[in-house]
Image (cartoon, rainbow, N blue to C red; front, side, top):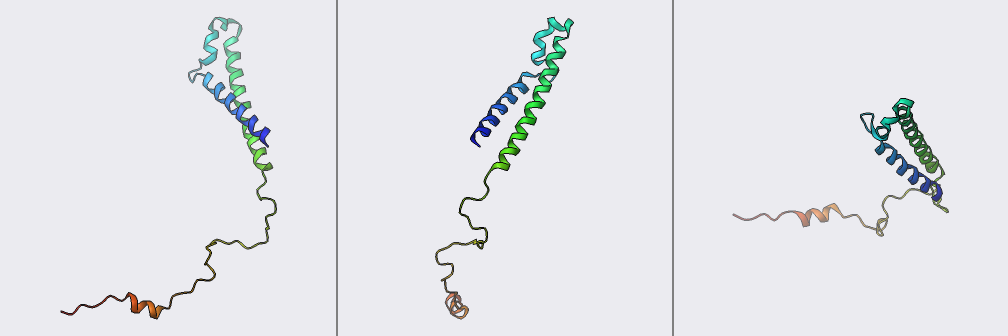
Length: 114
């Protein structure tokens, strides 16, 4: 599991570097090989960068899916048949409900005499 995470991080860094090496206007790393354009060096470099981008992106996505599928979603010893308790307040089951008649007498505002 840790090995897959390390591989994902390495591939993500490589993907970032490959994307940053590209120029949105078609130059990028291929612009440095303008002298070799007679033999097709620029086009081959651009094709390589595009293929590397897609390959790394697919590899990162696939490894993320594999990593997510290998995760243990339930801790060991967890009882799946146990009821779900939303409120675990220590006095949740022992608290007494207030009597509405008592609270009305206490909370009623005092009327002032004119």
